[in-house]
Length: 263
Image (cartoon, rainbow, N blue to C red; front, side, top):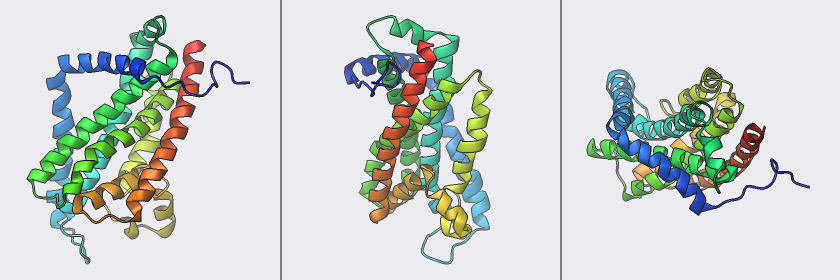
């Protein structure tokens, strides 16, 4: 028999949106400080690597310029960062420092509602990041297809995955330092080995196979196809794989968060 901590997730969008609205209200108060890093850092990476390193990198096939190659990858990477960091450092602050989770579950809201609201907010941060970068690379001429309009919606869905990953680490965190392990052993390896900066076929075969297991890899590959308007089975596989992975990680993270808050 399922216990209070291992029961299936109870999805109440109406209650989850209440938590989301609280985070949105706080975000609006500090919007200028929040939006700046979202837009500036990806552009710095795009400029430094795309223009700087791109001067020395050429492709022997039809991939185009190096700057055009990494632009979709930057969308994927920084929407991942946005969701993950919001649901680690941000969520940990609300849970353990400000004790907001305890205050919320003392109301008619339950742990599942708070968790859903936090995950939705992390996914929203991914949406913001992806949309801003997409607008910029569109103005720079790196978007060739109207299918790119699907990318923000895709970022919202995949943002839910990376938000759930962040909340899973938050459920185990004993301090902010805990997240250094997640960043060094999980986030940065994906950033460098998921096809953001270099084609996967340039890696050894073993690394390439492992890379396709990482959730950022199919996400970046799908974004590239949407940008150029050449959809293949890669996009369908990416969507199905990421949806399944989200369902698993969301459920595991919720169980761990119940253990943390009930204890």
